[in-house]
Amino acid sequence: MTTSPTNTRHDPGLEEVVAAQTVLSHIDGAAGALIIRGVPVEALAEQAEFEEVVHLLWQGFFDDLPKTAELKTRLAEARAEAFRSLEPDFARLAAMPPMEAVRAALALGQDGHDLKTAIAALARAGVMTAALKPLSEGRAPTPPTPGLAHAEDMLAIMGEARTPEVVAGLNAYLVTVAEHGLNASTFAARVVASTQAGLLSAVIGGISALKGPLHGGAPGPVLDMLDAIGSIENAETWIRASLERGDRLMGFGHRVYRARDPRADALKLAAARLPRSTGRLALAEAIETTILTRLAAEKPDRKLDTNVEYYTAILLEALGFDRAAFTCVFAAARTAGWIAHAQEQLLTRRIIRPQSIYVGPLDNVAA
Ligand code: SDX
Image 1 (cartoon, rainbow, N blue to C red):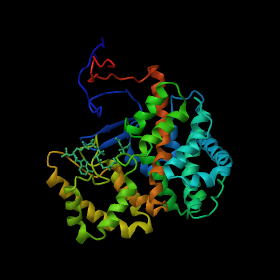
Image 2: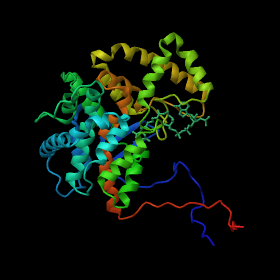
Image 3: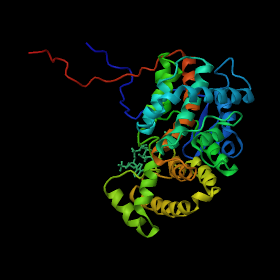
Image 4: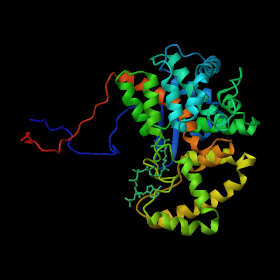
């Protein structure tokens, strides 16, 4: 006889389940606030270098975590090693869909449980993400440049202009999306980590979940939507038709936020500082207003506001990334958060194994 689970309420989206206690971040969905280790994300986006946020997230999870400056040096060395190691496979990896190429690049690495594995994973994700664009254009990626910070070195590998605004724009993006509580990909990373599979395996689990259009795969389709709408005059008609079809408008809605995702404006600010974004940004803002009005009218009982992905699309396009690779940039940043959560899960010494309620036949004896 099967034993019935103690908690008999089936919650497929786990909305009501608290699956972790975390020191890493807090999301106030009602207020539209996000703090990362006690610091508002807006402040980090404005002031912190990505390596500082990595250090902030990993504090307490690696006994041998060096100071930020040394971590930055080791990450730079790891990018050079990742480039050397991946270069022979660049052509094969470039033939894959972008997120699969980044996942494969990580899978070629050496799994482990230590800081070296963590730094190597972060480096490998950044290098492969940056290499995708030159490879897609038949150009050789530029080898990592010693002494550059992570964001600037990614742009250098891409062969993109590295003006202070562009470097600051990518850095702000990496910082803003590095950590966001128990989202689907981070939960996936924690599940994998809980079996002691290794940090690289946890990151690959996270990448696989992030790839989905309902999660990290939304920014590219945001641009597709803006292209399809074309002008503010078409916006109302296009949006009404899309909602009538039951489509989800990419870049809007969130499982936790019932107010505006604070990251949306942090990224909008970064995009506004880039000359290349001005045309797209003005149209995006006008269309956003129309979308929010329509969502409020058609889904009055559900507060649907702009999420992180809407202005992610405008910013990453202005930084020179191909829309098919936007989710890779997200993964390159979120790898820092996945690793922190993986380490935090390991400290619980508990494998993640929820219950299920059997609803199949009990007497299905083969005839
Ligand atoms: C990320 O969790 C995280 O933290 C994720 C993330 C992170 O940093 O890791 O913040 C990153 O994933 C941001 C979200 C990116 N995805 C998109 O922009 C895709 C579009 N958004 C939706 O698919 C949706 O809003 C979700 C997936 C984000 C949230 O879905 P929920 O909480 O499961 O809500 P739901 O799908 O049950 O929708 C509830 C209602 C529905 O109405 P009914 O069908 O019941 O009448 O709201 C409607 C939905 O139709 N709705 C939308 C909508 N989002 C929800 N309707 C139109 N367009 C949308 N975008």
